[in-house]
Image (cartoon, rainbow over all chains, first blue to last red; front, top):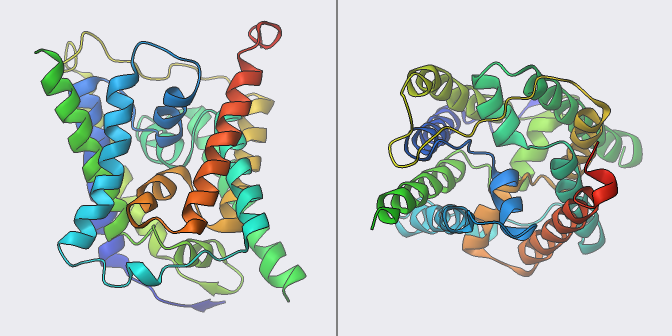
Length: 145
Length: 146
């Protein structure tokens, strides 16, 4: 193992901002900041509580814009996908299918659920972390190695 | 007008979340994949993202849930299930494969639309299609009992 590009301070600050966001949404709106759940509720089925979901997702994108606008995102234009189009499509489908079946993603289970000490979120987080680590191992060191 | 503070709070939470993901550099899938590459070029940074998020949220959540109701709505809507089933684990495993392949989980994926290129649009469309199809299947009457 070789440790690369370790940036603990921005990582921690960014994480704390995400935690603040989740706390704000719970305090003001009584909802959990799970991105897959919030976005999924916009897509299907049609329900009465679309407005705040759309506004939240617009906010996410706006947050990325503000980051670049204040001059922090100098390297953003160089960010590239790590795989080709067919794998991007498969990955996107799997993320959509998996987070819907498993009722949550990194934020809903990993940050919000674990903060409430939910046993379901602990199991889900361990499942997707282990699966992702095995996937990267296979792609980089079995196939790619 | 009672809608306005509620929606402004949702907007502020979204902005804070997207900005936080950007500061944490989770919008760079190469960094995410390196975090998952424990046996190669490991970048432990993202453990600090989760640590920071959990720390703040784990301190704040018990205080918030002790309130009678949220500021701008009538009641808290938090998940209450505690059973572990195959769907939870299977969904997690499928999500993990997708996350490991491309380095995108839903938050960074949607936030990355702020500098949309063709790759990001492609994976966002695939993500939305996967979400729609699965929600449609799970919402059919035959599946509703499960």
